[in-house]
Length: 247
Image (cartoon, rainbow, N blue to C red):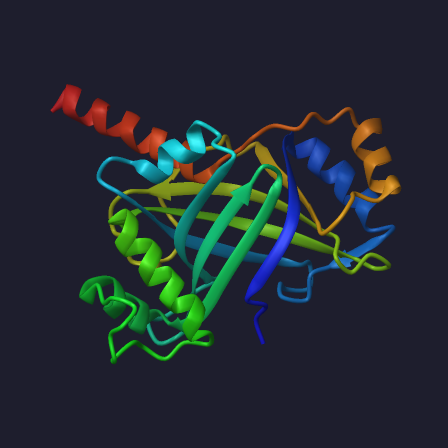
């Protein structure tokens, strides 16, 4: 069963391909591949992000408000409209990330997006957690959110052998599109981060173990705030301006 509620710290870094290979070999001494992925812990993620006409969600994140939140619909690997999807509310207060999600079919998720029910509707689609589904609906209605942009990437994920709450992920092949907002059409679009760069994230409930802190220090990695959503929006707007200029 999919975990529906997360509370953890997330530390982000932007690293080179060479640094990725070096760190990956070091991690395998104390971590193992995520069982949700293939034999190498790899899988694909495609997310549909929502925003208001005034870009309220974008500016919350861009301006680094102490409390900010996002709404997204996410699928993993190749998916049909009958397969499962995850409606997620991701909230961040200072450095602590809270994620609440519920599972439903992608087809039902599309119907919910189109019909715009309120939390008192009697015909809500079946979901793994009805309370979280109502939170999704309330959040969307309160902020007047609409489907905005798709973000996709490949991920290799590691979990701690002796630290079960420790998770390290490497995201690469990061692409976006603000057209064809159908998740089942797969990952494609424009790269919003250079293909030779990788987003490293360290996720932990309490503190980063000393051995991992030592690796980060020895490799001289510096934390870098990387918002996949904001970077995607900015690229989409840049491309739109170019199309307008040359049309």
